[in-house]
Length: 173
Image 1 (cartoon, one colour):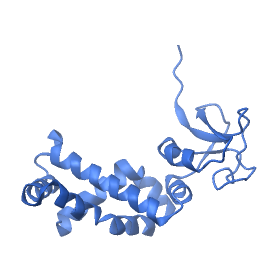
Image 2 (tube, one colour; image 1 turned 90 degrees about the vertical axis):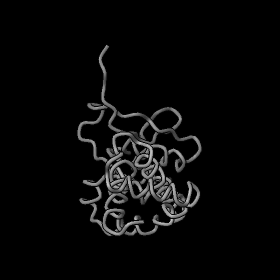
Image 3 (cartoon, helix red, strand yellow; image 1 turned 90 degrees about the horizontal axis):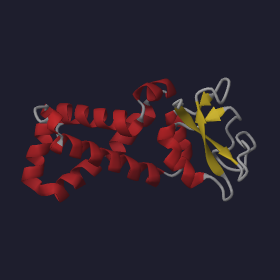
Image 4 (cartoon, helix red, strand yellow; image 1 turned 135 degrees about the vertical axis):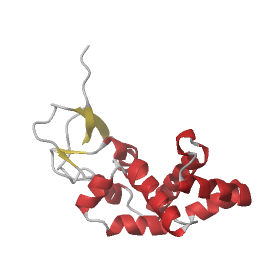
């Protein structure tokens, strides 16, 4: 059995025919060779029109795929500030939980800051403090160039945890 590497998804009609570039919604407006990155598929699935599907695309399926950059995907697929804010708050909380409870992070200064805060204010208090950082995190992301965003991606697993660690180490909670 040959394993193929998933590179992303394209929008198709109900018969599986690629409709990227045909328009009809904010996702299908991208050129026909565009590929939605796997980390943005969940968001894209919420934005496609009725009768449209997300077709998995594997290495070799498209001669020269043009990945929709994660930054572009985030701004296109999270089309309201509130959705992006909620996603960022959830990512920050997840990163904080990894630092507080992750065994590999126990001795990191940022983990100690969060553990002390968790003990002092409890989980609910810490959650409020962490999620209140979402607008600042979003603002720093938006200030990056597309190239910088692509280097810092994926947003949820790389940028946000790194941003939180830097914030805690330079400014505290």
